[in-house]
Length: 105
Image 1 (cartoon, rainbow, N blue to C red):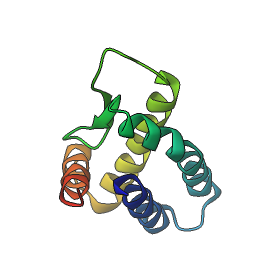
Image 2: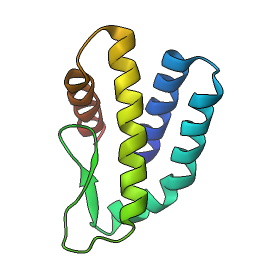
Image 3: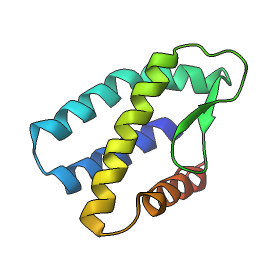
């Protein structure tokens, strides 16, 4: 449920920051495609959310590293664009996103 809320929030953020640009649609599409794998990794306790709004491995098992890396890269792209649009630091955007994720717990 938390992951679905994250995707919805990211979709709103993408729409706000990028409008209807194809770039935003491609990120949204990639994140949507990865979501079932990420939910599975979270449900099995392999990855979790950090206090900076990214995924991190929480066990020695590093399953689907490519999926986690791609997700984190797309999140970074989104956070960077939001920071530029709002004229704030990326660290502030990351902390806000992490706080939202944890509060929706």
